[in-house]
Amino acid sequence: MDIQQDLSKLIYLDNAATTFPKPKEVLQQALDFFSFYGVNPGRSGYDLCVYAGEMVHNTRKELAEFFGGSNPDYLTFAYNASDALNIIIPGILREGDHAISTTIEHNSVIRPLNHLRKEKGVEVEYVSVGEDFRVDPDEIASRFRDNTRLVIVNHGSNVVGAIQPVAEIGALCRERGIYFAIDTAQTAGMIPVDVEAMNVDALAFTGHKSLLGPTGIGGVWVREGVDIRATRAGGTGVRSAHPMHLNEFPYRLEVGTCNLLGIAALLYAQEYIAGRGLDNIYKHEMELFKKLYEGISDIEGVTLYGPTTIEGRLPVLSLNVANREAADVGTLLDVEFDIATRTGLHCAPMIHQQMGTGEHGSVRMSIGPMNEMKDVEAGIHAVAEIARDALG
Ligand SMILES: Cc1ncc(COP(=O)(O)O)c(C=O)c1O
Image: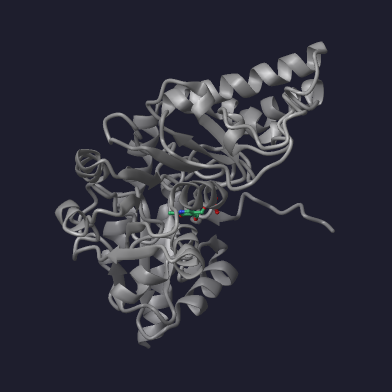
């Protein structure tokens, strides 16, 4: 199969799905590392193995600090955010517990919760976000019960970019001794995440979006002392005679051989992010987003969804064009204009229901660190052309 494409023509506005392209230096450094040290870390005492293990530990340390944590062992690796949430949610909740979440969640939160509701009788409540697409922390607190064990909230929406008031929610949970978890799939690597300032007890991250790693790597950070049990068991490379999965961190939440290439990429990507500066990356993306938002707002026949200001949001825009179905607009953007977007429900059905787009969803344009102003201008032009055509 010939997978070479002329990328110079492609306008990639699907960064909320995964950032693309990744910084070349990150990929190259990870590949170099894997070429020289690609053995099974932590399994043996020879030099390569020790060095690979050190790299894994350094990545834990860098990421734990990046999220405001201190103990590297409490930063554990998973495949992606969905996998991480499947470690956190069933790891914390037990039969008879009550959990609170919101209507702006991704299926990676909704489905594990719904499975526990069905299979373990966990009670689950979804609090609606308001007209500004933010959940009211007091509304969450008003649902607290004696058996509430977990509140889990999306830090930033992959549909409309709204950033949730997680610090306020975290403070209310802490007062009541309720665990607070956040899904940082869209925010990690884009805006600061500080588990201390936000009173977070567990955090799920994915490596392939703004953390600029490849697909297949993500993870969990948990606060020391959080009562989270392993939901899977297997090889850890140490204390092999033990018949049960190890309780100590980082082993408790990890099984089997890790994604060494992905972990190496995350480490080099941390250097890249620090070099460009997290604030600068976000500022760059929001400058482009402002142009996109304002340009598209001016087009007749276009409906925009989400917060009506660009403050406190991520560079993610959901829209529909006149009487055209979202999927058709996506196809036109791709085929006629070489613009990659995503259409449909974006794995977040409840927020689409709340927006009245529960059936066909929306077209989503999302900005990433590699976008330039010309990408945004092309996006505005293409939507204007499609709208003009639709309105006849
Ligand atoms: C808010 C949110 N949560 C979770 C996920 C799942 O991430 P992953 O596909 O890396 O598991 C996504 C992915 O789009 C997301 O946007």
